[in-house]
Image (cartoon, rainbow, N blue to C red; front, side, top):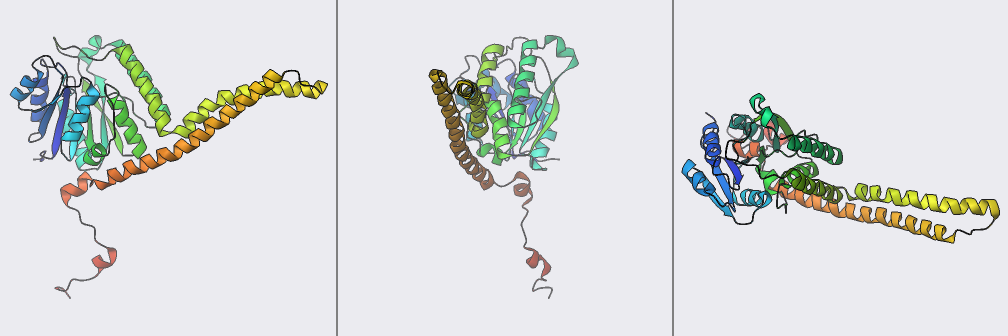
Length: 332
């Protein structure tokens, strides 16, 4: 029987009294011996009481927002593997053992549970959520070259070294985006597995606003792209300025070639100014690229300070090749 005592199931919750007990019981059954830790995120109902009644440890986070709740969970809970799951009873607990094994036994840093709606629940699926997720996942994959089909999934298993090197200031639903960017910046190992996704039960309502939160997540994607790959981001911004400079200066140069005079001084001056702006953008991007690389190196060092889960669990000891070849004094 597998020992799950080094696993922490972390559950951010806001007003989930109808479902949090189901989540706790399902994951206690799927991962016997694992710790179930729920964050009561400024709930106004009996979420905390229901979680305790089901057998979970409950932390309190008074600042409303999923990002705050996840930051409290990942910062305060100690484990070799963290299984992050929402408290709305929409994720399949039966997928948890395989996801956790990938982290503990194969050394995967993040296992993303890609949501596949159960056939009986497809009629209840919100089209706006599905379309927005597809669009945002496509944009993210294009910007960060991390091939995930469901970048906004709230169901993922993560290694300790991945979690403890995760610098985040997320406040809301953009927390999943930041986890993905952290994975891309570290070039960490990531696997995506399909998991059954069920509709919310009666009396449970989604806290995600399709348009408001969608805009916030898209804006966060673009800002994180700017921070992670500033040279490319600023170079893309420089392209239209350089095009404008070429168009304006070309008109003045053509006039001089034909008449020997320049009467379009405003266009020439504006063209030179646009060219200077484009150069400044590229130079700024180059400087910020060095800053970003330094930041990545610092995060990478924090990541390497934590032992790999597979190594720590099996107590593997490195032996120098020349030592392994020498006989011991007892056998000599």
